[in-house]
Image (cartoon, rainbow, N blue to C red; front, side):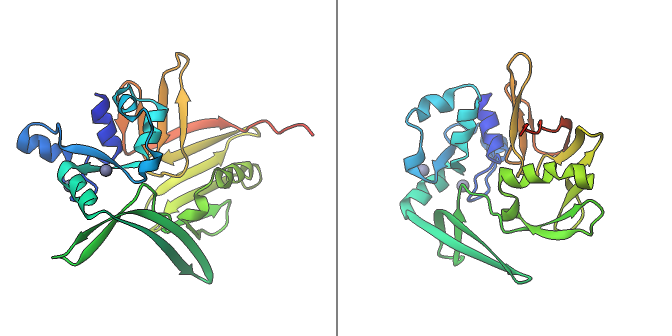
Length: 242
Ligand SMILES: [Zn+2]
Ligand SMILES: [Zn+2]
């Protein structure tokens, strides 16, 4: 059970060749010994990795999986055999602004296709979204600008002033996040599961945990959701007395 959730959390297919766990099951009736987690930075691998990965799902385990990519056993052998590590300095220029991101990872080189592919534990953050605040016209925002807790905490704080905000995908086809002020102290938040920027974990009164992270929702009982919308009613954090 735990292994299946781990695989789903990592996309359920080999990051390099795309062979999926369901393909393995359909063809060979098993995925045992065919899926492996490759640490992008070996030095960050937990000392208790083997025990940790066998455990029931927990935050530490998910943190560990976030340092890895999922590979089939053949691609895992290949990535170590080629053993090419790279760090890319990406630069995006858009309407006079420059956005940068460093991505480090491993490369697989396909000599026949003349193609290099980079595999990283980092999310690519130089893609475009659209944000509209209050009644203002939507403007373009780059992923990297949203990649901090501070960004969202400021956005939520501002709700009392502008009543609502909305973030959509680049093509303007889907609402990824929408917050609406309900009263002086409450706001409603709708978040598309696949929107990966705002992550949190919840525990119910029995202490059972649920995680919203990396564009997925998962819980201790094995539930796993990769699409849909989470709606919540939230209170503003109390304002600190001066
Ligand atoms: Zn593969
Ligand atoms: Zn490896």
